[in-house]
Length: 70
Image 1 (cartoon, rainbow, N blue to C red):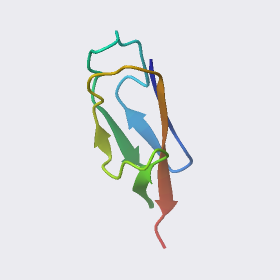
Image 2: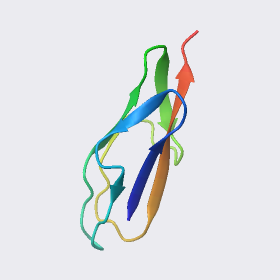
Image 3: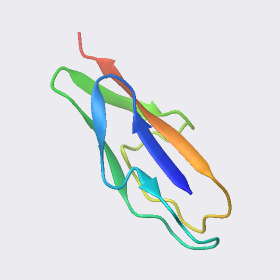
């Protein structure tokens, strides 16, 4: 199971909840910032806004973190 969410300042483009069989790949999701914000990273340390998990063997939950542009 893959679960993606977004903190304040943006949203997730793609399937935010994905049931994935063990050993299979998930679908691509993208963290998209609202106007006045920028994508910083995912809560698990991934720094690219677009991600696609491969060879899933366990639950993964990650939140996109955004920062207000000053």
